[in-house]
Image (cartoon, rainbow over all chains, first blue to last red; front, side):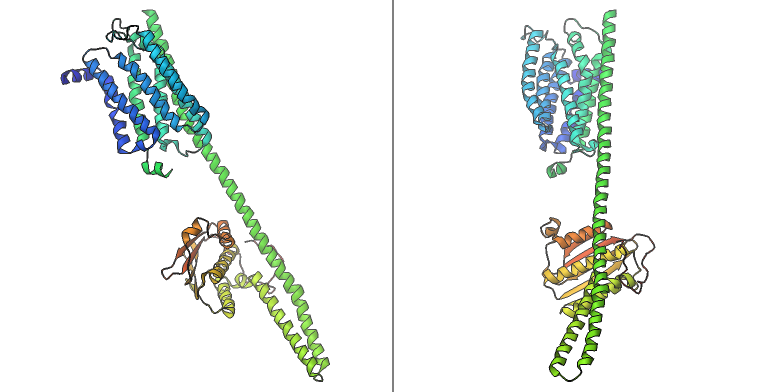
Length: 232
Length: 287
């Protein structure tokens, strides 16, 4: 089995790296005790779920099985946890009120999208990627990041953004979701078990920016100070 | 096939544009936040300077008013009292030694006038420290101590660190003098002490004034929190703010308290010269 994993890791280094690198911010969150901040606690839950799902997907990919059902499941979990992170960070009540219902509506919409793309849900072998949900998720997350940046600029509470942990998290999310907006719909048509469409380097972009965003999360956690957080 | 290639290229361009936008947004937020903070800092600096200027003007006005009152006391009331004394002397000669009762009343009146003259002189000297302007800090403090010891049973000592304390700018000397007055008065009023020690220390950068007493002491933290900060202590802070000075309060080991005021030395030629013969010039004091 290990041979298969190693073979697959060598075959798709980018995919393998994007799985392994999740350990870096995970360890850092625990080591720096960043989980005392509610938003970083949600980030910790997100990273744990991401690692588990990524490992499962890696296992399925290494054993040549369809893992797209897991990818589809990730979308809901990822959006709920990450938007929850913003929920605890936003100070404006109007935006907070908008986050929770949108999470619910988005989850229902994703479930509908999974169902409309896969009429036979029990057939995991021919499971297909969602058509609209990944793009919608990207647009919503970009919107949340931009709104948060606007709030940061308006409130003028952080003298140096480079030492503000959540700024790095936002930067990582903005880059990842900006890369996904156009790639996500293409993946729906490209990633099919029975008829593969070659989209060249486009299918590498999510992995590259997944790694970049995880590295930026790690930067944010590195500048996190539990003592400073407690004082504030 | 060609259509697929075109679609891939379109997606590439779109993704690239989105990523550029993301980089731009991140850089813009960083730059804009930095600029807003720089502007805010500048505005705070202007506000701070303006308040300092207001404070400076208020203290200048206070000193000018003190000087005007002192001058009026000296020129008008002082002169009139001197003339009254002369007149009484002449009247005393006219009355002669015929009537004992009248002579007694005359002597009492003369002594009252003498006493009033002394009081007026003391008040004018308290209002404007002429010794400070003429001879400098150490002499002025020494005189202040001497006067206090005449009316109190306290033991007040002055330790001037350097034998010949070099003269400083009028503003610095007056600030230190007024702070010393306030601290000593506070010690007398509130500390219930029997000994006060005043020391002047000086190095290349600072002049330090330390006032130590052996009284009941106080909690320095309460001053920091603003619970004990009365008008006197606020006045000290205000005066120090103008000359960029600082003050620290601490408890003494023996139960008393200690206040240390540090004033930075400005490398300028002292404008103080030995005072003119007339001590109360009618001019604006620049402190």
